[in-house]
Image (cartoon, rainbow, N blue to C red):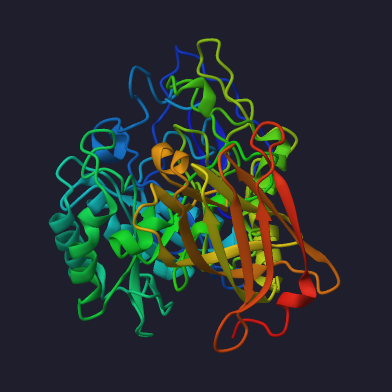
Amino acid sequence: MAKGRWVLFTSTLLILGCSLTAAPRPVTPTVAPSIAATPTSGPSLPPVTGPEPSYRAAAFYYPWYGNPKIDGKWIHWEEPDFHPPQDISSDYYPALGAYSSRDPAVVAQHMAWLRQAGIGVIITSWWGQGTPEDDTVPLLLRMAEQYGIKVAFHIEPYSARTASGLVRDIKYLYQQYGTSPAFFRSTATTHYSPAKQPKGMFFVWCIEFVGECGRQPAQADYWQAAMDEIHALPEGALVIANTQQGSWIDGGHFDGLYNYVSNNLAGGSDFGWAAGLPPDSLYIPSVAPGFSGRRIADPADTYAPRNDGAKYDEQWKAALGTGLQPELVTITSFNEWHEGTMIEPPAPGATNGQGYTYSDFGSLPPDGYLTLTHEWIGKYLQMTWPASYRARIQITTTSDWTTVAAISGGRWTRPEMVAASQTAAQSTLDDQGRFALLQPLADANAGKSVEMTWDVSLAGLDPGGTLILEIDRGDLGSTQLTIYNYVGNSPVPVKTFRWSGITRGRNPDHVVIPASLLLNGPNP
């Protein structure tokens, strides 16, 4: 970490730009500490050092903090009923104190830390035109430019957000900030953004609602016309939606998906929703070091302990282990102190002066997550991604329900529906990678049949191994599965299996297919 300056708070000695090793003295309620460092510029800012950060790694960033010294009042640190600067609405206490997001010295230090971690992009929380978060953007862009960081936008669910309003917002962001060298642009292409010119990337939180989360639900097609208008802008755009439903890509004409946070991975296995992403869409996973919002009374089931960095390692492994190459890995977060997801260094040993000792990073030093992030970004950038092989899956059933999943030897990704019976009640690939074909019970009792066909990419195949599929079905009728090799111009059936037996529970049976039958050539 770059060496910086010492800043003396009345009750706490903090180091800006250095590894934070000295614990602050406990704050007592009888002492009124100064609030924040005086804004500075020029030589006193942390120097720009080290290699260039990666623009394939981003962190969600929150510019919504304020204090009386800079802003004339406390902002966010006091909600809902806390008493800063000692007593703040977080399970942790920042090494920089209860700072202001408008303090150039603070923002510069953030950029220096981001660079130390190897993070090249911040995705700044944005709550609409003319809001306090909008007002901080010029400072963010100015400081980001100095440190080689880029700025993207996280369009939040403010109450007046609508589909047409989203179009206006993106036009506004281009107009107001698009000339800055720090404005993040990507040359990635998707089905709905096929042009290779640099274009802004915009993240939309809580996309399944029109405005505020939980108020007015929205289906994918609500956004479709707006996405088409955004894609038709002179620069175009990449719009990344916060949902784990792959069907929203084609339903809403989005370019990709991100999860923001997935606290409780099932056994640390994978980000199952990635399996449902259709071809030519962007996989943008979000990894978090933990989640801890107990002081602000977040629901108990959101708590995810950090476990001395083990949680973060688990998240990175899962995000990179889906068989899909991420376009960008996003980190939740750099500085969301309320929910305790930040990798920004805390002040170890800090108290609120009223008997509460703030959490720290356990056995990790305060800048430990900056180091871990740097290491994981290095691994990510050096990874090679397995070849994928095109295949076709055809499922026919006379049962009321049947499912098919790949349980070992490979996984399918990039599903694209070819056909499905109109009488099918459901013909989907769920967010855990399981095909599901259902029909009304009355039709199954009458012996009627439904069918669906999907093209997929198979990843993780071992040429000398086998792909094992599991068929589940109801007690009625039977299910037929045909898998096709699709490495040429047309699909060729390599295995057909019919299952009509009755066992226990979901009536499972397995289909074993030599991988060599599917490996005549990788997907171009």
